Every structure is written in C-alpha cells, then in structure tokens.
Length: 127
Image (cartoon, rainbow, N blue to C red; front, top):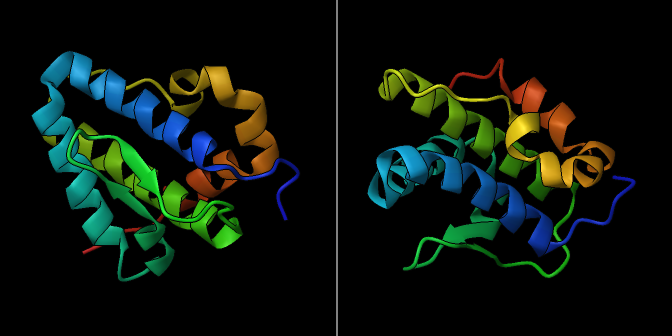
C-alpha cells in the first residue's frame, strides 16, 4: 500500500506535466495521439488503465475517486510507454527524465511508489 494517498489530482498532475512538455514542442494533436496509442498498447496487460481517459479537451479523467495501487501500476506503465513512444517517434525531442518533468509532485510520487513502478515498466515491451 502506498504511503501517500492516491488522489485523482496526483494522476492528473503527472499527466499534465508530460502533456505540457510534449505539447510545447509538437502540439496538442501529437501529444493526444501518443497518449491514446500508448494507452491502447498497455491495456491488454494492465486493464486498470481503463480507469483513465482523455476527454475532448485533452485533460485526464480519473474514473475512481480513490484509485488503488493497481491503478497506479497501470498508470505508471502507460506513462512509461508514452515516454518510450515519444522518444522513438519524434526524433530530436530531448526528453528529460520523469523526475525532472514531475518535480513539483516528487515527494508524493516517491512515497506513492509511482517512480518505482515507472522504472520497472521500462523493461516491458508491448505489441
């Protein structure tokens, strides 16, 4: 069980941080495309990713008011896959590490276990 309570806002803040970085370099359309593509790739392996959706304006909707550790794991795998796809597909975009991009939420993400799940997901390959 994470030491930090998992709130929808924590997930939304991480999503927004990654989204803002990619949008600032390539636009909202590219960011949305890669978020959707990476979500679909992890879905068969991490069905709890269905607790998260992008709405029409590109913001993250968290369906559960109190997401659990399984949702955290699915979200971390999704964000890891998103970062991988951005690095593979958009040549020349320098992508800082996740801790730099989410520095404002670092303490909560460390104690929740997000960074650990994110690092573990780096080894995974999705079809």
